[in-house]
Length: 413
Image (cartoon, rainbow, N blue to C red):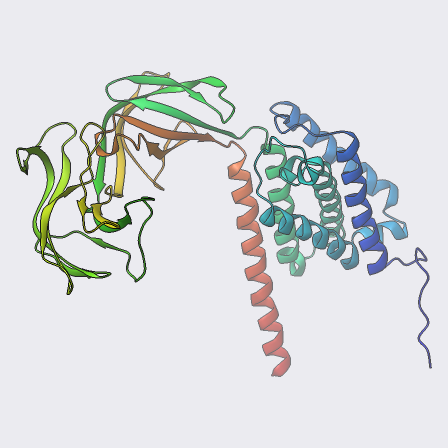
């Protein structure tokens, strides 16, 4: 006995129609990308985003009033429409994960469809607005008239709506800038990725830039190409005092290690001077050759590096020390006349007047002698609303999980 298939667009609409609508919006969005290219620099900022947000809320309420007694309302506030919209949005998120979301100079298929900047593209805009409409109608349907047993569902869905709404409207107000701080100088200008400068309502003075480094490593390189020689693992060994280790075909012993040094005559001596570099006296032995002894150094911005030739093909050298931790001791000035001494570290931002200040980088050529510290200053006034939405989702989900378990236990009893 064959099963009767419901024709498309025959009421009530179901999953087929929901996916067709969602993918239809996606298709229209990509058509607009082909005809009206979005600008990566275009964004809606305050107060225009607030005005558009208020207009959108009013339109949703008007739309609800017009369709509340129709089958369209039942469809848009039902499960099939939600799953269709979320599925297409998930597809876009997957594309964002696969395609680097960075500006590209060359014209190709990716840039033509704005796949490299999806969050500012027409398809992403359409699907987000569609999902916001569906979520709003779901919340209204479940929340009117209000029943306490539904508050967890309404809370979690309202939290998701607030998160998407705030993240979308607030993207234009997000400022992510960089500042170049030089020791003993005060800076109040920051710049974006395009080199545009902005005067900030705060100023930062770099008092001291500090780097803690790991010890340098021993490595063998090819004499002709300068490439790292790595027939066996590990291919590099960290230098330590009195170290004896096997590095590929050579047995290496550290006879002397100087974290800071300078060369004088036929050897290196301890030296605490600007630009002093690590150096080590090493002894090399193999089963097939005589012992070798010599000094190696990674050098610095004002001192040459020195390697030890092992044979006609390979040489032993010291790598540049890698940073273990770097931080900036700064004084931050605000328009109200206050000043605060802060320490900026990687992944440990300081917050001043709504701005988050992150330690970002430094002058790598100068290494530990860098007098330049690059920090990132970020202001996202809508972030608090995104956090509120996420918190509401968590509270609602925990309540529904608890209530579901409670109903299950009562039914088993």
